[in-house]
Image (cartoon, rainbow, N blue to C red; front, top):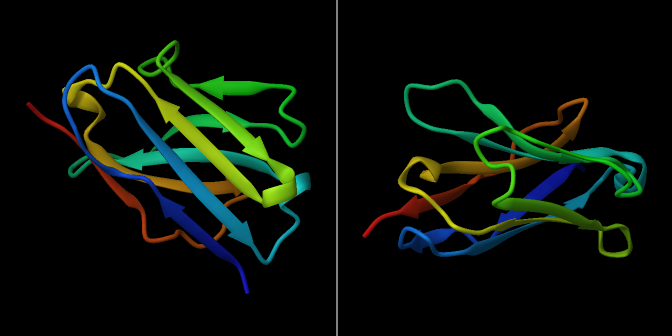
Length: 114
């Protein structure tokens, strides 16, 4: 059974940091391109960051490049998203998934507010 279990969301002030984690099971994680997405009400879900199977290449949306860092631990079937210098516009529900897409997990609410 495929599972994507995200953790680490919450409320943070502008300029603050959060680290999201996603533990995957039920598929070949170490061979998979993994990514973090976010979906804000009224907007399409967007890819925030992605990482290739051996961490040799990463991809970032322009809006987060230089502030967010994606990483993975294949031994733990876990992908991380370190989010620094958070901005109001980063408020969203964050999801992890692979490419090609699997069923979505429950997502994590990240709220940036003063």
